[in-house]
Amino acid sequence: TSSANSSSTASNTMTSDANQLQEILAAITNGNSERAADAITRMLGREECRAIKGKVKKKLSNEEPNLSSIIIDGINEAISHHTNPKGGTRTLVAEAFVKDIVLACVWGTVGGEGEDISNSILSGIIGTTKKQVDMARNTARDIRAGISELTALQRNRRKDFIRDALLQFLYQWIKDDKVSRF
Image (cartoon, rainbow, N blue to C red):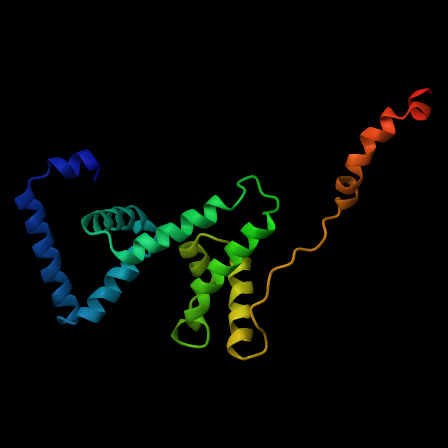
């Protein structure tokens, strides 16, 4: 159903649809709310229900913005802001910032109930790559086990560091009379 179609549907018809869906769900699950929630979640996870899932998420998020979604959206925006869309490297400060955020986000998923959550699900929620989530989880495991400590991030020297180091001298070399006389 298109959004124009759903907005033109009478309110009492939509209420009736909701009541019927609730009755059917209660009948199927014998009134078990956990089972009903699981059934809805599994249904919305199917590929053919992707459009329904998107509309449900949008309607639920428009009803009442909760603190969790505001925080997650902020994390996504912060990581996106410090990520170059064309690829390449981040500055040292930006890299440390992103790694620290990802570490904090995955901290609760290590060594407990969240251990079975996949890296791809976490990377989708956080807004980063699976590799970054994997590295952060490994770091969190090491820190919790006492194997490692938080340390300042140090970036390895870039391969083109010589060009950057010699650039200041290049202009003087070109201006040198002995060289420019050729």
